[in-house]
Length: 222
Image (cartoon, rainbow, N blue to C red; front, side, top):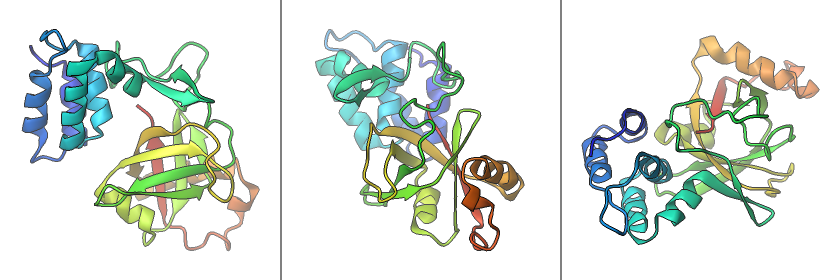
């Protein structure tokens, strides 16, 4: 079965060059418990849940062979107060806008308008490091300001896969966690990110307080 074009594009963006062909081959041979080829929707769910990691991809393909419903639940739903809430629709291409009726952006509802988010970045070992941060919101994306010498910046350079959840000022998570992709912005995009943050926090407008800020991160949800 030929892979959907959007799945091929997703793999090319999220897997490193040495592993792309192997990841595509695994997806192409993925089957459900009846030995039928996985549908485009299921392939999108498997790819998304792999987070660009071959080991996780293998785990998702094995899960697909046991019960494909578990794969759909893991990729398209999150838990909010113990109840499953659908936040993605992989009947549509992975790179289609993640906008549903009544939602003006792709930012998950539990994050919108909150004062702090817990941003979890990944060490090379796969261990997560969570940090409470301020964030701006614009066009379905979140924006975070930091410094180039901070640990989270270095970890994002190595692995753009992150997790985001609402939290308190001390980092206590208060809602569901969402997988996302972080991008370190080039200098020409700093002003737009800073404006999004300034609109939300008056203290962010004090130049002396944030004089050492030299890095802005864009967080997008898939």
